[in-house]
Length: 245
Image (cartoon, rainbow, N blue to C red):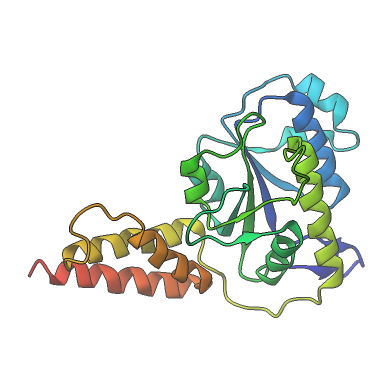
């Protein structure tokens, strides 16, 4: 939930910062500081590439406790399983995925706050997100930097998004209460059931190419509730079983 709490303090939208394979301890400290600057508390780290937390703590001014409680995970899937919207930070264009600016991501994260958590995914300092990770995200976002020096330091990129999230939360009215949105793991169940049904009914006879990905993209844009996701999964699995009778 966004807006003012009963004590008058602003509550940040439910956003998880996800770092994949970070290897620079100073970046970890700077990310923690940026999160504290703008009211973010939730972060997950997959395949942590450094254990020099002493160096990280020197940079994490007044945010040292965040370094004591990141969610350490093995995979991107694990990091985002309970998130209703997964946004990868990449300048690549991928069919079926929107490309949004940081301010657009922030506004939509605030709009989706009543449904559940948004994951904002950052790749490693050297090469960013892999092609597979880009495809795994629901939508993509990039900071419009200059052509002469397009890449940003990891912590700098987090600062930009954290600032936009804070700005959007300040500007937005409290969202209406709604039922919980379907998390990424539940949407993955829908995708798997759709793939099974399409193969069982003969729509997919060879390599699926973009078919399933494009169809799932439309489902994700619908922002399914948990109940709707379960209904989709059950219906599609029933269709798949019907071919076997």
